[in-house]
Each structure stands twice: as structure tokens, then as C-alpha cells.
Amino acid sequence: MTRAAGISDQPVALEPVGKGNRAAILALELSLGQQGFVASNADSLAEARQDDEAIPRAVVAAGRVVGFLMYSAPDDDDEAIIYRFMIDRREQGKGFGRAAVAKTLEEIARRSHVHRVSICYEPENEAARRLYAGFGFVEQGLDEDGEMIALLELGG
Image (tube, rainbow, N blue to C red; front, top):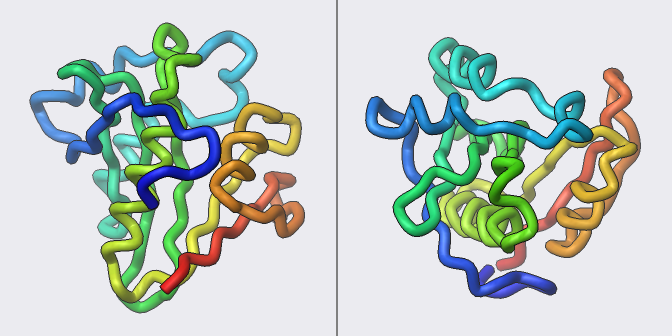
């Protein structure tokens, strides 16, 4: 997964969440129009502390935390689920989102038991729809909470 359609050359890294980046993750903000689309980072970090399968990551560019995501890839399942993803409102439009999704898919693909990746988003979140479709995610329909489920089959 080095370069999907529309990927910028913006270098980002995914880093485990820890004492050194937790405050920066908590300081990230969504734009006003996006605030209803994703749980707060504080709620997500609290959830990660309680859920052994949660894999939280700071999205880092040029030494700065610019975003946050969380996924799970249980050993007893061939599907990984990306269930939190956000880029700080001040860092949007710079290619960090696309680069972070690409890095996340690369990280997940290294888990040899995973053959597909799913993601959920609010159906009215057009930016998310376009972003994930650009990587080949195919919408499967709405879940019981009214969120769109999209699925990506990993090759090879």
C-alpha cells in the first residue's frame, strides 16, 4: 500500500500512544462541522485503556501530533476494524489524512491473519466517504447505529 489514488507525499508516522504524546492527542480538535462524527479523543483513550484489543496511534508529521486513530485486529479474526480516525482541524487539507490511512493500512496488512479491513462513518460525512472510497473501501450498508460500514479486501 505505498501509493493509493490521490495519496499525497506528506510523510507521517504512526506512534503508539504514551506519556510523551497523550497531551498532544487530547489537544487535537475537530472542525465544528465534524464534531458529531467521531467520539472525543479523551473518550477514545479511556476506551483504549479498558479494551485489550484497541490499538491507539498518534498520527505524527514533522515531529508534531496532527491526528489520532484507533483500530483493532484480534488474533482470532481475519478482519481489522478502524473505528476512530481524526486529523486536527488546523492540519486538515494538507494530505495528512490520506497519508495516515495509507500508513494504517500498511500496519494492518503486516498482521498476516488480517484479510480485510472495515471502517464505519456517519453517512452524511462526505469527506470520509470520499477518503475511504479512494483506497478501495466499498460501502456495505448501515449498521444498527445508522453508521455506514465500508469494507476493504486486502490483496495477497
